[in-house]
Image: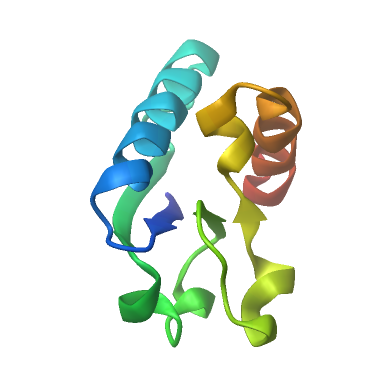
Length: 94
């Protein structure tokens, strides 16, 4: 089972929207049983990034974890969201 973290500034607002979109995408691909999604805020997770197979954020993250985080803003805007999903598929090895 893969672990995916979706985070935003508060762990409530934009991460909820992205979580819904990712759940739908996973279900459409038939991968919903292969990935556990955890939703949180950046401040709570910054020291736990390595606990996850993939991380999507809708807010700025510290420089020391940028290379491990996929920016999720395109999922919110709809512009470029397919590239985010392609990257997620690659990182999660689905």
